[in-house]
Image (cartoon, rainbow, N blue to C red):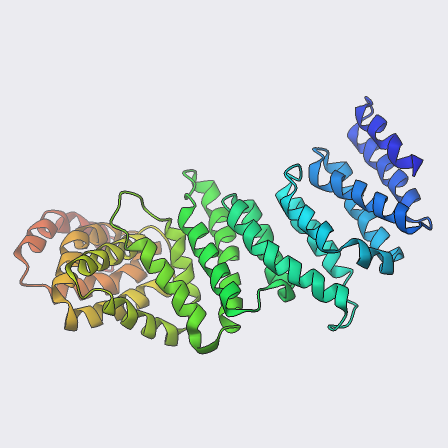
Length: 378
């Protein structure tokens, strides 16, 4: 145990970090590889936990996590007792544990050391119950930092036993993920956008796992409705376009049912205004965010709207057709914009105001497209 007290002095020393890492690693291993009684084991576990979750020295966090894993492997029964509800609750609620990503790494290490136990093992059952409850709350509270959300998503997708079990918990987690996705801001620097898309897609990848645990597509439809609430909001704020990644994950059968549900909410004047806002946002995203399925979802709604809410489609066309046309010369967006452009164009040939707006920009757009040999349909 004395070896651990030497580490504080080591941190304050003027030695280079690479040497400190070697020494810290050796000191921690000397402790965790020795036989420990229950009290010592608990104290060592607590000290390692604090270093993992509070230290600003990466070498100490890494060495502590490695030592934590060795401690768990060498003291299996005592480790199960240490990781009780009190310990788990403290991990998620203690304000001094500020290293969010490190916390998820610690949780993964704990779970890996419980995986050998049978499903009926009481400590394991209690651990999973506590984790399922705390993880949803933790993601809701700290997920606005994308790195934290990605770490939690990695935990959910790697160790799926941590996913919620009850319909209420599944619905709550789906709602948290949608809310977070809608709150993020796309980076202004082009070199950061690829990483942003990767990270938000990772968070989205949790949703199909949750939908699969729900009966009758209920969780999936609730998720899509949550997306619709955000994108149909007529206030000043704009939800993040990475919400389109949610639609990309939805099975086709649910897409059809969701479009029917969305139309049923647009029977009033307010409902129509919300539908126009939602469809306009989705159309604008097609010119900013590469997608595979979003345009299909939009077209499905357009076909239904054309039959039941023609005034909605006219409003969407007049507000967006010129913007769509200007984006057609961009190759990465063209394939997803073309079907939307032609549907709106041919469906509203009697709209004088729309053609007046379009006429001024069309020659320039056609000239750009002609250089690429893609003007035949126009």
